[in-house]
Image 1 (spheres, rainbow, N blue to C red):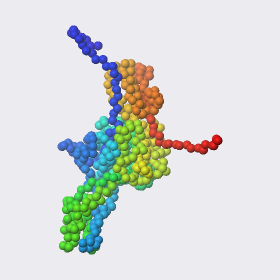
Image 2 (cartoon, one colour):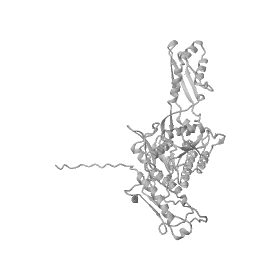
Image 3 (spheres, rainbow, N blue to C red):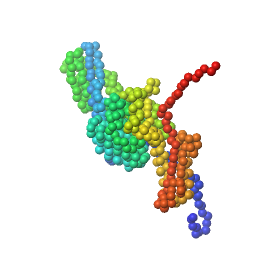
Image 4 (cartoon, rainbow, N blue to C red):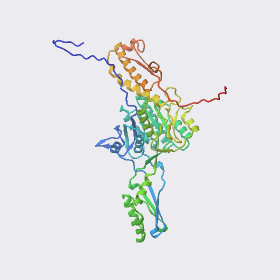
Amino acid sequence: MATYNTPGVYIQEIPKLPASVAQVATAIPAFIGYTENTSYNGNSIKWVPVRIQSFLEYEQIFGGPNSEVKISVKITETGSGSNIVQKHEILPFSPTAIKHFMYYALQMYFANGGGPCYIVSAGPYGTVNKGHLTSALDALEQEDEPTLIVCPDAISIPSPTGAGLTNFSSLFDETLMQCAKLQDRFAIFDTYTESGDPLADGTAFRNNTGSNNLKYGAVYYPRLLTSLSYVYKNTQVTFKHGKVDGGGTMDTTGILDGKTLDQALTAMVATTTSAGDKAKYEAVLTESFLSSIRDSIAQTQIILSPSSAIAGVYASVDASRGVWKAPANVSLVGVAEPTVKITDQLQQTLNIDATSGKSINAIRTFTGKGVLVWGARTLAGNDNEWRYVNVRRLFITAEESIKKASAFVVFEPNDANTWVRVKAMIENYLTGLWRDGALAGATPQEAFFVNVGLGTTMTSDDILNGKLNIEVGMAAVRPAEFIILSFSHKLQTS
């Protein structure tokens, strides 16, 4: 009670409303990988988590994609004189030519409903090094807000076998360890190998990754043929062309160095040996023809691992339905098709593995529905408690929200008054979750319980040692993964 020594009128405000739990953000991913820029406004951003709101902000801070793809355009002519017909084709190049995926991964994330996120640069473009990625992961541990971890460049750790696979497995285990240590985040992974055989890829993944903390991560397969186009610089494009009138071939590889497309094609005209050929080239190398070359390059599609698109799906489902809704049976935006077609029979061994329990969520194409995420299991696929992604993430959200809201109780008297306040606060929060559909049960009593008090969750010794133990139980809703329709004949009765 306050003491009053001077005569007068005093106002005393008495708190009557209970404390409340503010739910933490549920889908704030952190992307780890290599970037063009590692400094911004004079400050180093290497291994520094940076929060961004949009893809435009990513480009402003971290720059563009790596110039690592060499595109070869073959130009051929048929006919003669004024009847020359000129054609071009983009010569095929290996999708594995790309080693740095962060720029394209962020495009897929935002296209599929992603919002605010963190970027942790592992360094400038160069050799993908497991040590760089681990350092970025360690820096992320100091950041409180992220709830998801995605590493698009992990599949580029050198060599799909031997040391490369060992390093990938090590990074995988370290990520899960951080999630388990902090208990406030969840990891989304890609499989390291993709041979075209789902069974072989699933076996390779399971045999070469650890078995600890599996409830804190989920894996998706296969890679995706996206609608994204390669971003390229003029110096990445070289030309080969057949001589006018079919008189053999002339190799002009490298003529584009340091020149724009228009300058390069003009330079090609200058390499002709006759004035007549030069005039013919100038007649056919029109702006529309140059535009058609640019369009052809733009139509070359990128193959990406699915983790970044899945992070966008998590964010989208959380925003529209809630973290308790399984992020599955959702179509992917910007995806033409999975690179491996998965049937019901093939998915059986991916979805459930009796030996390791490491479930792999499939991405499949369905007629009339498009490309769908067709799995919602954590890596702990045989664990009755933590089998489903939405259950694990709901508990992460509730635990973190209640933990932060309970901070006001620290150093408060450990007595019945405090226990009642804390219990009421948590029950109000869980009642809200139940009303939103996050918890199962016809009544709040069936959906959850909150226990706190001497003789219930605490002993006299606990109180003497300053401990306030609270026990919370929730009946989380689980997805209907298998819909079984039973049919039988009904005998005629009249």
